[in-house]
Amino acid sequence: MSQFKNHSINTKLIHGGISSDEATGSVNIPIYQTSTFKQEIPGVHKGYEYSRTGNPTREALENLIAELEEGIAGFAFASGLAAITVVLSLFRAGDKLVVSDNVYGGTFRVMDKVFQNFGIGYILVDTTDREKIEAAIDENVKAVYIETPTNPLLGITDIRTVAKLAKKKHILTIVDNTFYTPYLQRPILEGADIVIHSATKYLGGHSDLVAGLVVVNDKELAEKIAFLQNATGGVLSPFDSFLLIRGINTLGVRLDRHVKNAEKLAQFLQGHPEVKKVYYPGLKDHPGYEVNKKQAKNGGAMISFELTENHNIHTFFRNLHIISLAESLGGVESLICHPASMTHAAIPEKIRDSVGITKGLLRFSVGIEQEEELQQDLEQAIAASRV
Ligand SMILES: *Cc1c(COP(=O)(O)O)cnc(C)c1O
Image 1 (tube, rainbow, N blue to C red):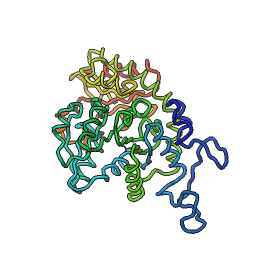
Image 2: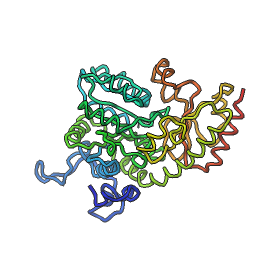
Image 3: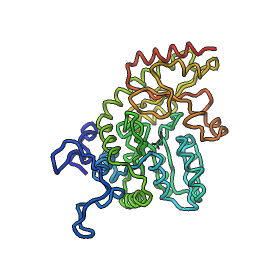
């Protein structure tokens, strides 16, 4: 860990991990674009043998995210799903996980269509309700896997409550912290064992790379994840590791602006007569408002909402000029998507409807453009899509 371990997150974002190059004094970590490293005699080397196992650029990133999340070890992968795949590979046939009932569609898909074939099961539960989690834990359940806020309905789960329950049952707490990042929420400090990121989103922050991260807080778990990372091979490249460090350096200033815009736009949408429902954990009437306030800095920058029935959603999308219709989130530019047909299409309609991912639901990733202009963009598109 770096000499900045005990500094504030704003300083750690810039100087955490390994932030400069010992050999040359370069203030940025170079892109070590190499697959292999010279050895003096077999096994005698400078700490690196082969870039799947370890690469200095990737290692700088891995140390940085570990420090930001207050864990003991970090691991970088070629995508969020590669990170999730390694975490799920900790389990064996017969094991089951209790999972938040509106997790990211791709997370559901890999559990349902891949790991289930290997005998690793899942039980979908409304994890905002402790009783329901406890009722679902039998002797085969080995972990609780949560997103808070959930994607796309922004439900809030009390991490501390889940972690306490999981500890009592001797099982793991896994938190996907993609929507908040360590700048807004640090699950390990609440008792989580494993934190996962799709770094493609806010950590990268510029919609220009795909990456995943895992942080753990236990030596034995760190050894297992390191083994799986090397054994399965879905590692992040040196160039993308460099880009991701560069993104993380500005995470604080970007998120401050993202959140400021989102807070204003959530209020605007809530007050709009043609908006039926707004989901934003920073609004006082959100059911998870108090729990969120306890464990996170604010309500983040993702807003989901539904227009009243007399709107054509396709016309709405076509009339947006600043906000782009696209999958993904967390970049500097505002993006909007239709979960039922895009990000969450992999989830069967029956499950989607039962959890509230309706055909009218829109998920809005608020960017850092001028807030008044984003508001105008929404306003005119809502008016133009009236039928
Ligand atoms: C995007 C996303 C993932 C998957 O990450 P990729 O980088 O796209 O593989 C996982 N969890 C959440 C919450 C996401 O938003």
